[in-house]
Each structure stands twice: as structure tokens, then as C-alpha cells.
Image (cartoon, rainbow, N blue to C red; front, top):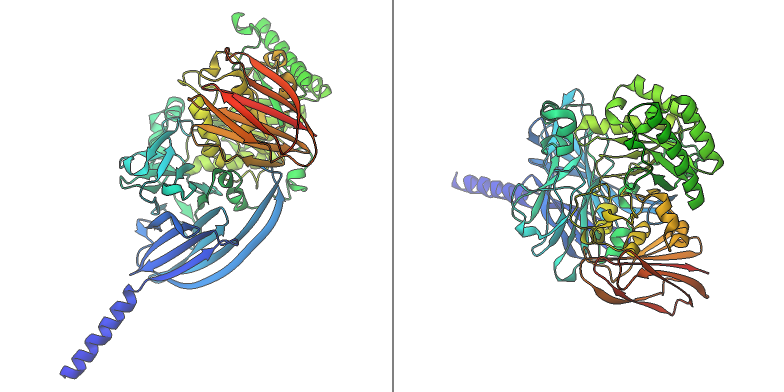
Length: 637
């Protein structure tokens, strides 16, 4: 009996040891730079992301709550199915051709009598995971994953008060108090020069958006839109009762598929800027609406004029009535004339268009078209919630020749609001309308699936009159918000809104900030009158190639070389501190280039100094930059 008992005890101990033994499944990127590994220890799932063998995200919880039950607990990996991707497709971001090259795996995970799938992807500049939970009937999902950052990591983030339109803070991750909120993308710098990372999400559809909340220990926890405090813009426009209604988790039917949780990773900032991972995870364009994909003829990127920030006639001084409306109409026509003089392709007209009438709208569209200018109009998202009304409006606008719509005031990431984004994009595609979302959340790569989305706001841009200064903010944005996708910052204002930045800095933002619809904030006449107008006219809205130069530092300096065709541009934004630097021109191709320089005036921030000279790739540019200064160079072969 004693021998049998001791044998049973040994068997039990062996079972316990086997149960506690960690099981790991991992995926390594094609170039073996990035690795994501999932470990199951005693039924608990965690994951780890490394860059060249060093942690980018330390061992962190991985799971999902379904009706209050965490499927990442009491879990068991039962099977691993591997695959790879290697696809190239046209793009409108940092470069004109994107690459989806990754290794992936689908992990079958048992949880009690049920099963679900954990999918992993590893790119050379990113790692990502998502969860797919099959089922029938209605269920309530919620967040259960996290991102533990290595000790000594520095983060840049802002909170949800202005709904993706905040000013970034730079903090040690360990100093971020438990409960503080961070809106993705959250960019971070690893200690000891180990590289950079940024946390965000991709393919947000049929789900609530993700925000992050600090755990007080250097980690960030996944939270969904219903759990995030309603933003000030949302409660201002829709009231506290609506905010309380959206604070209830959404119920989903059938199979539940989360968005991808994405960690960009690279040894330098250029790697993050050029990562294609976020949009590579999204489905390609729907051929029903985009038969030639991104090259479908009505998908026309370009620069836009916009009457809002910087004057545009004295119509507001007139009393309400026909005279004031006629004034606004004539100003709109004049803005199209000025856009034509600049060679810009678009004009965005704010809400005054609704007083024009269809006959005047048709006149404006026809007049603008003869000048090579397409007309967009502003609409309120509240008026787009009824499908029938929305489709009727879109068909009317398309019939009048309107090119695009600027949809404003979404201001929340609850599932019902995310559903509205998708409905607007689909109906706009059906009516061949381009889209610019304002009061919006961060992009998640869905502009690949819906390439009629040209841009969205989700940034504190020049619309904000009370921002204390722009120099530090503008040198932070290229490595934070712009990593997620294009932003409608409305750059280039030469008046008082430029605050602590110079004219050269303002012109450089048009090079550094990417947006396939590049809406200039300044009055078009101020652009035409500026000494740098020849360079301004030549800055494109889309690029073939981008290099974030190694002198760049988040919040201090953004130096970008971008190519369009055989012409290169160099855009430099300086932060708060004056500095001198030398920038080699090794990015240029062979041969000689005619260079045009737009530099800070030494004594006057509201002036520029112009210079022209011949250069080659063996030359360099030496800059002495003011605080808030800037520099632009155009290189023509």
C-alpha cells in the first residue's frame, strides 16, 4: 500500500510539474529583427516582444474578457499553424509603395470546453496580435491585455480630454501614475540606446477603440472606448446622458474578432516612420468601389485651400441674410481662384455652403473645375446617423460635382461611433466622395481598405488658438501621432497662430507632416505673397520615399528628406532650443542638383532668407537654427 501511495504521489507530482511547465509559441520576423513569443504557464497566457533579442515589451498579460470571463486564464495552446506574407501595394504615406512582409501564426487555444484563436504577426519593424473568439448569440467583450515596458523606458503620451487632440508629455514610464490615460499611438524610447517603440491598434472595425491606462508600475493596460472618460468635445456637443449611455460595454453577435494590437519597433526613428505594419494588417480595397485600388481615377490626393483660420473676407460683419450669403459665396469662388494660382487641387468649404443653394453650389463646382480645383464641403456627423438621409445627401452632393466631405464631431470610440465611421466611408465610396474626418480618433490602417479616406484630424493642430507654443509639439508629432497615419493638422500659417515658430518652420511642416489631402491653414493670398511661394507651390501632398534623418530627436528636432519623382525636399523643424547642425546630402542621387533653400531670418521670425546653389550628394548643409526655427530645401536634378 505504501509503495502504491508513493507511486501515486510521484505521478501526481509529475502531472503538477507538467502543468506548471511553460509552453511557448513564437514568431520571428523575416529579417529576424523582431520576435513575438506567447507563453502559457499554469494556464496563464503572457507575451513578450523583442527587438534583436532585447525586450521592447516585457512579459505582459494577454487575454480577452467575454461576459466577464478572461479567456487568457485557464488556457492551453493546442496547435500552431504558421504562414507568411510578401505583398507590395501602392500607398500614400511615407512612400508610394508599401510592403507587407511578415511571418505569422494562428494559435489554437483551449479554454474549458471551448476554443479560440490567437493570431500573431511579426514584421521587421513591428509585432502584432489579435484574438478571434468563435461563437453564436450575443456576448460582451472587454479588455484583458497589457504592455509592460522595460525599466528606464521614456514615453510620450497625452490623455483623452480632447479626444486625440492633446499635447504630448514626455515622462519616464515608471513615473506615470496608476489610472493615468494615454491615447495611442504611445511612442517610447528604450533605455541604453536599445531603440524605440510605439503602441497602437490596427483594423478597428466592428469593435470599440482602444485606449491605454497606466498601471503605476511602468506598464499600460488595454481599455476599450466605453471605459474611457468621455471627452470634453463629446459631452459639450452630445451631453452627459449620451456619454453615460456609451459608457456601457457593447454587445456583439457571433464570432468576435478584436482589432490588432500593434507594437512598432526599431533601432531608430526612421524605422518607425517607414513601417507599413499598421495598414498592411488591413484588408485591401474593396473592388466593388475601387476597381483599380488606390489608382481608381476619382481618388485624387492634393493640396487644399481653406477659409477658416486665417481670414477670408469681411462677410461676418454683414447682418444675417442674402447679402451675407452672397458675400460668402463670392469668397468661396475667390478661394478657388487663389487655389488655381497656387496650383492646388482642392478647396474645403466650411458650413456656409449650406446657405448657397444647389444652383450656386453647381456654379462654384463648375467655376472651380475650370481652374483645376475640386470642392469639398463640411458636414456634421450627427446628420449622418440615419442611413437613408445620409445616402440621399451623398447622392445629391455627387450629382452636384462635389469631390469630398469633411465629417466633423465624432469625438468618441464606443463601438456605435466606430460603426458610423465605416457606414460613412462605404456610402461615400458608393457616391464617389472623398472623406476627411474631424473630431476623430486615431487612424488604424483602414484607409487601405477605404482609400476614399484621405485624412483625419486626431491631432492638436493649428485650429487650436490657445496652444501655448508649437515648437516642441511639432517636433514630437512626426514620431507619435503621424506613425498611425495621415493627420489634418492644417499647417502653414504666417500670422499670430504660429506662436513660437518661424515662417521657415511653418513652411517645413508641409514637408514633414503627411496628409494626402494637405489642407493649408494660411489664407492662400498669404502663401502667394510669401517670398518662399515658389517652394510652397512645389511641395506635393504625397511622397515616393521618406528618410527620417538620424539627427532627429523626439520633441527636439524633426529632420526629414522626402522624394517626389526625381525631386528631393528637406524639411527641418526645430524645438525650443537654438542649435547648429550639419546635414549630409547623401540621400540625393547621382549628378548635380539645383538647390533652393528657405531658412530662418536671423533677426525676424516673420521673414525668411532664400538661397540658391548647386549641390551633389557629397555636399552637406550647415544650419544655425533659432528656437522654433525651421529649414526647407528643394533639390531639382
